[in-house]
Image 1: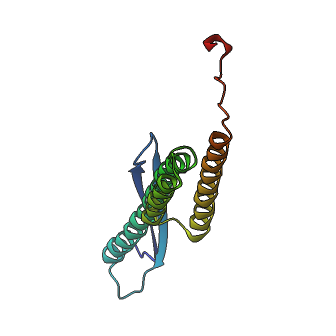
Image 2: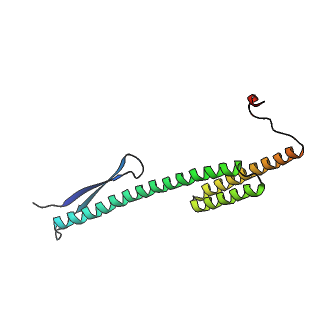
Image 3: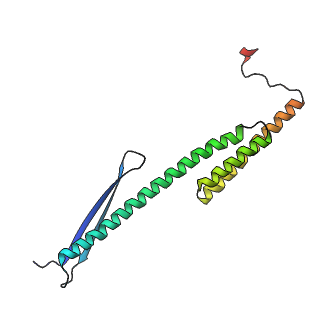
Length: 155
């Protein structure tokens, strides 16, 4: 029997690193066999190349999933710090300390450029809101204004 062409198909399955599910990569390669080549050797080499490509595809998928997860975790922490900046701190100095820590977290997050700029703007806006609230509170206290309780039951 004279074999002129050989095809191989290799599949690889990877479990999702954070959720239930998996990813399936499949690579099919075909090669023509020269008269001087051994068909078994060509098949083994082709299978090795196909396996390498299937593994590479799975590695890229897993790397992308892990990067997306890292960014989601970083954003979750940044949301927490954004809330701290806009609501905590009784003095401007305290608010600025929270803002500086939030900026450090932003740098550590190593987000893509557009996301980094967006979060830098959000954190600055949160600081401005907190400083405005602190200044308004000072003005109210200087005028002798006392904030009434939220509930009338307290009167």
